[in-house]
Length: 375
Image 1 (cartoon, rainbow, N blue to C red):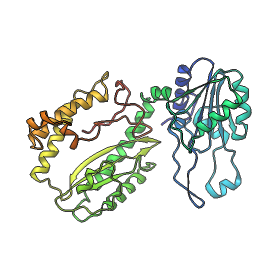
Image 2: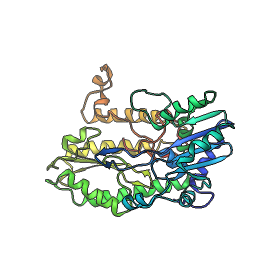
Image 3: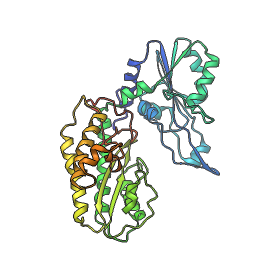
Image 4: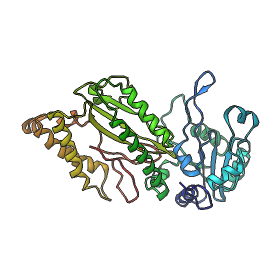
């Protein structure tokens, strides 16, 4: 993904956002903060997706300020002490080269510049959820909103989320290339483990091999907790313990994806542990494959995931009846859809910086959007 130069991806993303913000508005976007684990340890850090989309900066405790007069990036001032213990932090020049933002300042200067820029704006966008949940734990945006309102009571405050959703849904070529790379790495890991699965192997050993392959191919790790589910474990949608043994005659479901340059992949495959489907397993597998192949031809711009899901439900219902899971009469007379027992989830979701990316089941598909596909 190209990052350098005045027309880098992050510059384009900020320009697109500025074009759809209300006139006379400014926006404040916070990075994620490091989350304490225990003692002096922290959980592995992953940047807030919207902040990365607009800046390309991966450092915690950073702030983006977009105003009618331009863009400002605030980062932690590097120190020798931090460099000694945690490694070098980006300089202002390095942050400018990554983000395409020429006005890079230290965090201590944020309030001073905010006050100056707020005088020439009337509206503030914050990266708030469209509906605030409340509660004891407040995000950086919620805490800042309370502080800002006390200092600038006449500014209107709006959520940035609807604007970010409209932008992030359609991917730039650089984003699609990063997603494709994440998918390629995931595919390589899948091929590697296909040759090692056999009765008696622990699920955790398969996870370990996948992890090794992702790291060797320059992935940043998993885009989500991997699911390595053998036998009955595969019926738990978000099974992630991965601590059972793969047994002869069972099926193994693997659901995982690499993260590359913060972009996600998501691949799910089901294979026989002993290398051969039983007749019943083969019939069920083939039924799902037939539905996937048939329905894939109908995916087109202008439809929604809800409509796609409806088509899959109809096709799977017919297959369920063929397989003898229930009869046509039972299907018609049931109070609740019988297919839900065997297909309790959705057929697809949007994918990008988040594995479940911005977009919902009623979003109309357009060229440049990326969705998963696996009924």
